[in-house]
Structures are given as structure tokens and as C-alpha cells.
Length: 376
Image (cartoon, rainbow, N blue to C red; front, side):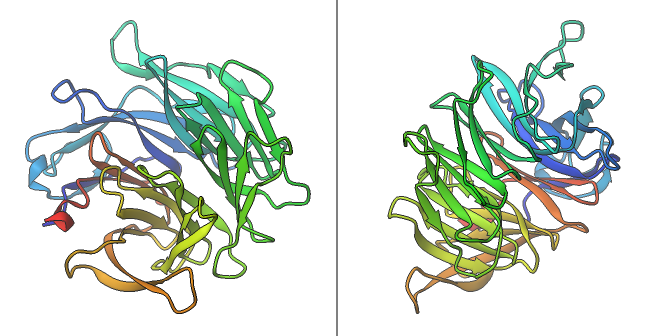
């Protein structure tokens, strides 16, 4: 049986990112609060939209429907906008939801080079969830070119950013100057990053000497400690995701549609490489409690689920290339959805068991318990 799902057309510009911003306790309100980043287009400002995803009668039946947001329907899910969009200077290229002192925030990377922090709170008059009007923190000249990505490490309480200027910065939330900076002379810009530990940042970007670079924040020199080269020559790394239980394990999505999985502690051992997309892979997300599953979204509109430890015959079987010549690994790949436009963003949230995706055609998909049928 297909997992319960619903699609919504946002009626705005193309969404660049979508994420679960807050998960209320069960039975106290919506399934989740969502934050969607939308590109401005034609040089105009982008925006951040806060919405609530609400379950209505019939949701567990799993029927799907496509319709504008804010309209109810037989699929049992409603997407309700919580106030007008919050304007964002430049296009929000990436967002990261984080919690500080019990409060919810969204960090953004802007096409202007800025890195900003917005707070989600309760409206004093209505009691509803809203974005605060202005960024509570903004490093306006964080990067000399577009900022590409942001990532937060809760253990360290630090925020990392990277950009097309080939710079990596780590920010203490309360300080103006960077806590740490790394710039690789002559390097191409970075497109994505991960923050697996208090002492390590990983970046991905354009082809060259290596596309994946591991930075040691404890090192005296601000140069990568480890460089990883994708097995397919000449590709760019556009997306990455950390294994939720073993953060030293990293998945990377590439411009040729391939996906690689690495163990960065072995050092930099390629575990497997698979291809299922026919176009660039823009987003990756591991399942939170069953991380043998990896979700991917590509420019070809496909949302795929990769099972790296298939236990029964289901899905299409592919064989990933292993670390040594001639090695192969059996992997099952399942098509979850085919969007009419490229998939810009995926986010799996373990608290709500929701997989979200946002596509170029303005469509947002919410999929509940996407691997439940594969675990039976």
C-alpha cells in the first residue's frame, strides 16, 4: 500500500527549500510546522513562508490529491499558511532549522552572500506561530559571492556556512566575526556542506583536485585536512547528507545523477556509488530511525528511496560500485514520486515521520511513513 501523501501547489515562485520547523506534541495541534524558502526571481526579494500541516478525517486512508494550499480534501491533509510570507533579502539558497535555549530558529544562506537567523515564535495577539519581522542575527557580508549552504551543530552550538567564493565560515551565534574561517586559494566555489562534529566541517563543490573536502576546525592552518574524489570523473557535488547514527558516514549527490556513500574516518573510504537519476541530484536525506534508507531528489523530477540493505525482493535492484575494482553491492531503489519539475529540496523529519519535497513547478509533497511498507 502506498504511504499516505498529499501534494500542494503553493502559488508562489519556485520553492528552493522546505523543512519541518517544529513538531508539536501529539494531539496538541498540527502534525508539523513547515518553513518553505521561495526564490524571488528577476532580482526581487525571496521569502520564507511558515505553514501548518494539519491532519483531517481520512488521512490514514492514504488517498492522494493535488490542489492549491489551504484547500481541504479527501486525502486528509491541509496546508494552512500562518500569516503572510516574510521577505528575505536575496534568494534563500538554503535553510537550516535549529533550536537555541528552547526557541526555534531558521538559518538562511542568501544569494547576496549574507547568512541570517530568523526566529519562529508565538504571536502575542493571536497565540499563533509566526516569523518575527526581522532577522534576529545577520552577517550581511559573510561571503563575497552567493552563500550556498548552512549547517548547525547542536553539540558545539555553532553555525557553518559555505559559498561560491570558496570560503567556509563557522559562526558563534552571539559574535560578529567568524569563530573559524577556511579559504582554499584557487578553489572553485562550494555548493553544500555538513557539520558532523564540533571539530569537523565537510564541503562539496565543483570538480578539480577533489570535490569533497573535510576541514578540521582544530588545525592551525585553514586548509582541508582530507580530500575525496568522486569515482566518476568531472562531476560536481551538489548535495550531501549525514548518516543520523554514524555521522562519519556521508552521502553525496552529483551533477551526473550518481550518489556516493563515504566513511570519512577510514580515511575517506568509498563505501558504494550508485546511479538512478538521469540528471543532477539536488537533495539527499537519510531516514532518521532506519538509516539504511536514503531519499534523493533530482533535476529529473524523481524522488527515489535507496535501500542499502534490502531484506526481500522489492524495488528495482541495482549494483553499486564498491571501494575496490570489481566490488559490487546489491541496492534496491524505489520510485516514491515523479514531480513535473526538478526536485530542489527533500527533508525527512523523524518526529512526524514526514518526508517533504519541493519542486520547481511550485509543488510541495508531504509523504507520511514513506518506508513503512518496505519494513514489513
